[in-house]
Length: 75
Image (cartoon, rainbow, N blue to C red):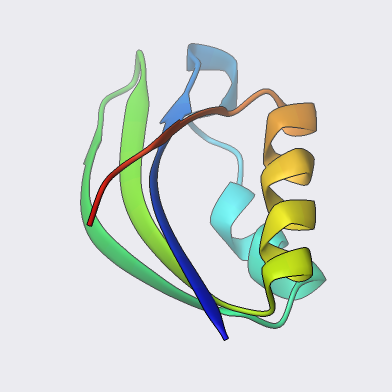
């Protein structure tokens, strides 16, 4: 079991999109929302993903391809 904590930063055009919902429908890891700030102009969410390392890495690639910026956080 692997765990990674990072900040997802949403550009304006993705703020209204169901990114987290789509992520959880695509992958089977556990997602814990640690904190968040969302406005009509931008948003960020700190999350911790726990599951298979390969699946988490695939999800990170998926998020980047969707246009979400990722900053890894130390735990």
